[in-house]
Image 1: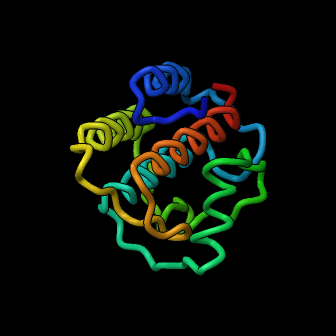
Image 2: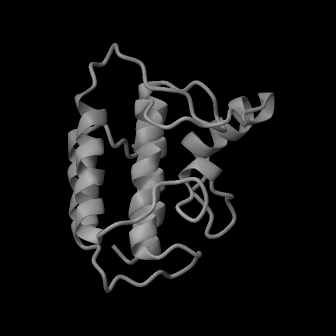
Length: 153
């Protein structure tokens, strides 16, 4: 069964891993430091919640084939995926403050996402376009897993 951040058991697993992240967490690949990564994963939640304005970079191929592969088939490759401008803390994304403060914001945004009524749609993704709650839940879970592995959590 695929992990889904909207499923309580999967969310608790991810939150336990998230608690392991601290100032001493060292990245295994990529360019973001630990604090930038926390802001980056929080910005993904903000996108799903509709709190981030972004350019629609989707295409027919990204809304169909690539979305299907990203959500249901492949694991996020190390260093191979270009971060959306609006989710990149080195560009248009949220700038880090203090790690513990940024971690608190992440948990708050995750709770907001999970508290959304099941019939309240989530917003479109900048590359994949319109997504169901289930698709968002799986994609967020996979994204968190990718970055938590990046920092050994």
